[in-house]
Amino acid sequence: MVPRGGTGKPRGTDLKSGVGGERDGRELKPVVPISHAEPGTGPVSIAVSFQVRPGRIPEFEDWAHQITVASARFPGHLGASWVRDGNIFHVAYRFEDDAQFHDWHESPERAAFLSRLTSIATLVSDDHLTGMETWFELPDHPGRPAPPRWKMVFATWIGVFPILALLQWLFGGRLAPFPLIARVMLLTLVVVFVMTYLVMPRITMVMKGWLYPE
Image 1 (cartoon, one colour):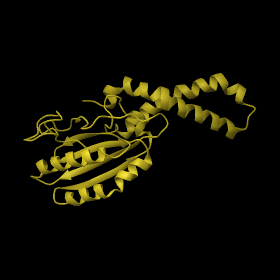
Image 2: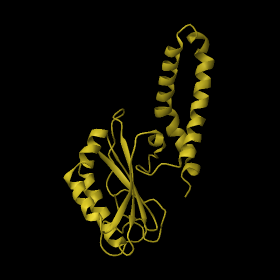
Image 3: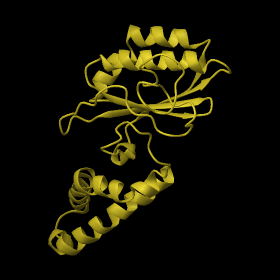
Image 4: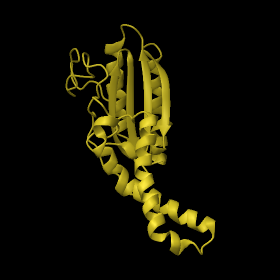
């Protein structure tokens, strides 16, 4: 969670300046270095939104910077990214797996930070993203909030359709003697594996301008 690394009024998106006073709606860089989870560990993404009370934005920026630094000290933290839209602040952050995320989420440190928040801002949403949102993460912008759901559905369909068509063309006849449930299990396993490790990272990069318009 990233807002300020220095003193004085925040300007722009530079980490040493703060959370972006004039550049509402634009992504802010992570405040901490991003580590890399080993394949198959199942990173967990969390999206949180806050509505800041009028006149309390500087205090919220200080609070957000402090809680970001505190969460980064917990094992498994993969980075965070903030976006401001007027008095609404959004943050997306990641942990290497669910257990390490819960170590932070249920920690006394986080509870103490939230207790300080009540006079500054309101917690609007706190969503644990474990679905297809993780397919749409950009390597150069880890922790960025996912695109709109309808865009994710369309991009996913673009990936699934040719894979299923190719599998049916190549192996449909050979798999015909097997029971239906066995064929479905095999094909869906192949589709999910190929989509996760091969197709979606490439589709996300190719469609980056449409999925994440500036």
